[in-house]
Amino acid sequence: KAKNECSKCMINQDVFERIQGKVLTAPERVNKRGTKPCLFGKGGTCCHVCNMGPCQIVEGVEELRGICGATAATVAARNFGRMVAAGTSAHSDHGRGIAEVFYHTVHGETEDFEIKDEKKLRMVAYYFGLDYKKPVKELAKEVAVNALEEFGKQHGELAFIKRAPEKRQQRWRELGVVPRGVDREVVEMLHRTTVGVDQDYRSLLKASVRCALADGWGGSMLATELQDILFGTPQPLRAVVNLGVLKEDMVNVTVHGHEPEVAEALAIAAQDPEIIKEAEKVGAKGINLAGICCTGNEVLMRRGIPIAGSFVQQELALATGAVEAMVVDVQCIMQNVATVASAYHTAVITVSDKAEIEGAMHIPFDHKHPVESAKKVLREAISRFPKRDKNLVYIPPNKMDVVAGFSHETILYILGGRFRASYKPLNENIINGRILGVAAIVGCDNFRVFEKTHAELAKELIANNILVVVTGCAATSIAREGLLSPEAASLAGDSLREVLEAVGCPPVLHMGSCVDNSRILIALTEMVNAGGLGEDLDDLPAIGCAPEWMSEKAVAIGNYFVGSGACVVFGPNFPTEKSQIATDYLFHEFYHIFGAPWVVARNASEFANIMIDKIKEKRKNLGI
Ligand code: BF8
Image (cartoon, rainbow, N blue to C red; front, side, top):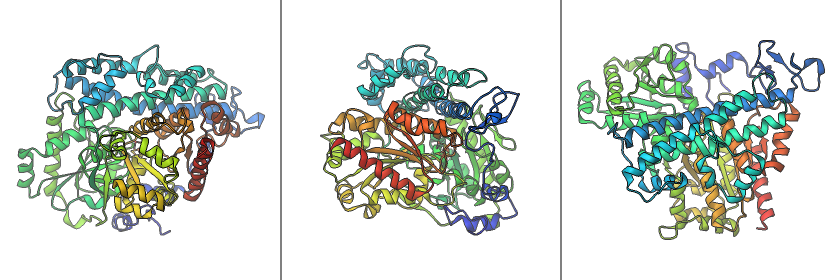
């Protein structure tokens, strides 16, 4: 490959050539550091939880245990558990943030947002054990208090655990892995993994599932549901993705990070006639909002706001020279965005009190007056527009049409029709063999992966009549390749294509951001409830994968899917792989404990083979 070529998105070659020598971006850093990551850190056996080390531990070599005697399996399990705890904390703190916005809104402390999905409010109230038939205003206040309490609950079970299939709940209870409060599980995981506490890899790995379940059925699910209630439950809509969504004649503001509150407020503020007038005054035609990473997925799903890029494209969006402001909240923001922006007229604006970046401008977001804060941000962006250097501007023409917005509720209606809203038709099509099974491609994209793994894998799966659902940056990278449009049904196998054409659906369904993986948990549960495919999630011909995982959050997600009974394939490597013992436990023993194993694959065809085989195995077990 040519140096500096982004193999995921060839268009970026133009951008790279233009910025060469001007700013240093991540792909160049990969080149400069060599193709291999740190050999000591890779594989999970570098222990740094105390100051006798750090110790590099080699499995089976007695003298290369930790100074304390820790084995490779213990260290790998400990590091794995810490990744799960970090990932869980990130999704869950996001969920808590939204619960606070929800609280402010329903208590009349902000008028910028309102209840948009009353039906979902009542459903959530039901799971909190509230009288869900109460008047909305009163009920919303109770839901707000209950939602916040889910985080600090000391005893009992998380409320949404009851949404899982009965059999799964029983298994969790027998195993003692039902999560209590989200915060409690994260704290306990960090405690267990500190020096000299839990020293049995089996106990550590089992505990990591309890923590991860607090993410999937707790923090993440709360985030998704409360966001839907406040900002609307997604419905299918048309939109556009890739760097070509930036506009030469408009003030371009990219929203980057994870929490939709900021982007929602910006979307409202950008329509304010006063703001539009101010933009016009400086010679722009208006404000063009474009998403990056999972904030992008949130506003794509609900508002059809275009996505400029996934995780690997964040620096490139700035290197177009056409972005006036990159507004960042939390998670997945590369520190280097501030450096790249400094080579242009662009402001990187941090808005969260939890996440500041050296060299960026900080405009704290007032959660009681979000739209006012958003206007401040937009005014800063507008003030930068006249400073844009036209000689530095190059917006690659590439963009792709997509259909997004497939919440599990929407899938219900699309597949079952308005009067028979259920997953039964999907199950029937799986039972009669038209659809072989369901696969989720989720998680990040990663500078260490040089192939277009996501898109190649998606193509292979749909060609084999497997319905694919996607979230996160994987969704954006597959969207760039055109697979999120109904026209892409032509790439599906004959029988899947027949089903898709009947309902007018793309072969790959965008289900949202990373916290929205909780939608997939519910969709799978709906499949169990619809009957004919077994009694628990591990009976389903369904499988998940994260072919380019990068963040600790992906480890938490994978672990809650495995703990819930869905096999997960990770790649291109696995975080415990330098301990055969810990890895075997996750790859084999977890199958006996939770009904689903972890698996690793290196490239698209390996992923596809494993996933197709696993789905066929489940079908065989079901006798279909
Ligand atoms: O939240 S933005 S890089 S971590 S996939 Fe991965 Fe993308 Fe980050 Fe999941 Ni979403």
